Length: 421
Image 1 (spheres, rainbow, N blue to C red):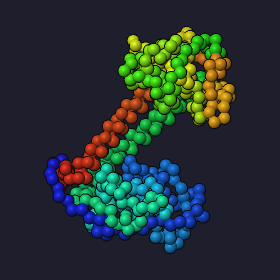
Image 2 (image 1 turned 30 degrees about the horizontal axis):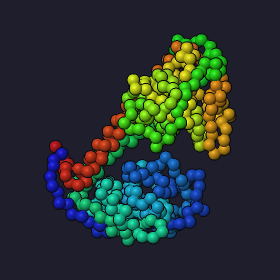
Image 3 (image 1 turned 180 degrees about the vertical axis):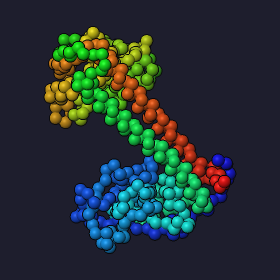
Image 4 (image 1 turned 120 degrees about the vertical axis):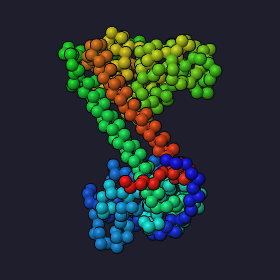
């Protein structure tokens, strides 16, 4: 790649031969469980230009119907959402089945291929600066939207068509890598979920473990750490004492917490009274949830700082006997169906479901030996580590794509012309 200032011309979609139309109303009577693809705004994704086919809706309609013929999609069409969440850009490639149609919330733009490469234009309109301009080009009124004239007046830089194609192909290659990483992460997540379902219930045993599991009443092997009832307004950013808030448990994806190194709210020691200090291996629950799936949500403490950490308002900090529940395994209690079912059955409340110490203590579970628990936890952590490595790679690849768009779509960096051998 070479760097070169490029005073590319700027033209409107209309100047590029853009023929603009939008979908029709009244498609509900044609909805079907199968048939032709019906593209809606939910099939457009602001993070990329490709049509999302994971949640399709279908219609059965005579392709010779006038409205069907008018709104039918073809490879190379450019799509723009024009109501509500405006300015989401889509590009119809060969992966979109034919025939396919659009509803009234999407505008279809068909450019003259001699004047512009529509995939390049899709990438350009999905980049930061054009997206910012979309906001300023919306029609005023009670409901945000763009009319077809506004869509026709959208502008794009116009390098020579061969260069447009090279830029679009380079960005499409990165998109393909991103898509493959997303698919691989999804596959790995599904595998990990399957592992949890079988390993945590004893349906599948790891090699070398044959000892029967035994029923354990959790209340016979637990003590509880005194919590401190503070609001966020009482937090002290200058204090070294960490504070675990129930809201931070609910919003957390990871099942463990390194309180010694991860960012945490701070609280002054003189506000904590006789609150207990957390220790490695403590399992801290959020004591309430509006969502049944949130009942039993917890984090296991894997490390604590010398200055200490305290469990905060609306948490339940449980300290289990480590000869019964192994460190590392406790984090996965929340995914054991028998554990969740018993907590959910006991949860009090209508809009908010409460978990209590007595509820946790009353749970009886079949548990493996501590040695097998450690092996199960290690297998699940290894699966999570693989996923995390892929997620980091995905984040980096998306950053690379953003940088490429900033360089290639502005002409700051030019792709060399391929010379035939």
